[in-house]
Length: 449
Image (cartoon, rainbow, N blue to C red; front, side):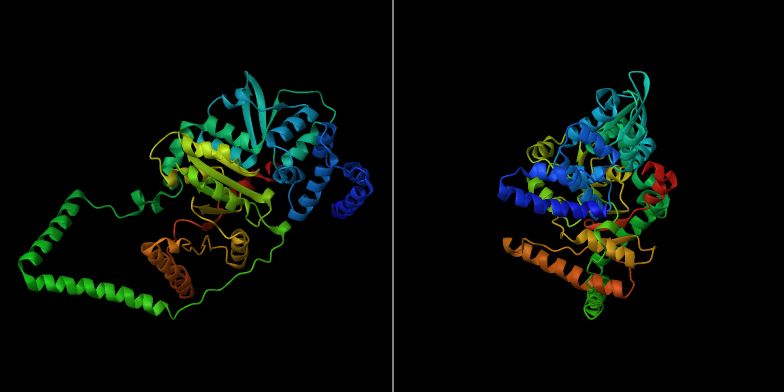
């Protein structure tokens, strides 16, 4: 692989010389790489008619980023997902997943999560056993090697990553919607509001409400009691503001510079839940596509609600690049951001996961900084909060106050709380999590990676 990368660099120089001499760069590139062996999936694509130049460029990128060659080729954008999958399926003699696979027997949420993690789904196509394989990862190479010299079969169907995700959502349907609505109550019910808070009997709630009402009535009728209540409330606010002033002299913001090489970076999942926000699609996609992270190691999922025609139309007008999936969460209630994120979490493949809002414009290095921070932290550190800043402070008096409030919180208060090892409130966006689902992936075994 290293020799291939060096050879690619020499080939670029040869191509430049060819342009000046009138020779065709493609011919020079092809001749320069004739001695370098292609992996089985690329050899199949070359037999299907793909030019060797992009294939060898993808090999160099795969070595640099530490990814599978087919993932690097797909992420390069040189060919569409449909074009690559159809060419590979034709060359190795398997089917392309289609309507019969999408309309197959329903699957439950657990099967959905397992199929999303492994990239494999056992199915029935036209009443016959059928195995749907997502065209990503090492499975592509193994399938191409195993199928060499064999006759065409309908028992295996190949699906591009986006088509595979759409297929799983269509097959899961109501089961996925129900699991997303239940959310963490299925995994850790004691940590949810419904089960984690102390349960009070109805009589106790009535007694508490009556006591509060009686206290307010007494304060209204007896001025000294009202003065005492106002004084107590004032002391509480004074204590809170005094604590914030104390934090101003607390910890400092420690800057982290990413030093981990591209080949050592893990797969990173990014979830973005949108609802009727078509206007922000161009700027949002521009920010996501500008992340300083190997494209083949990004598992970005844009989560939409069924019936959100506005956002779907905006995505059709400005399609995302390869590696960004659009998951339409099946109809169900309540239609909230947590429900959409729960659905996306079931399909997450990354070692780490970040949650962004539609209006977020993350720093290009944010994911690499998060990986660096996680690697330096103990394993019990499960979440990181990125710094948030308001960038429309010039839009008016209220926006300037929001900017001041955010600067005080993220530049002063949170670093001080961290230095004092106190709990840190999460802002709800630009949060980064260590992937506990990775344990499931490891338990499944490397043969499904």
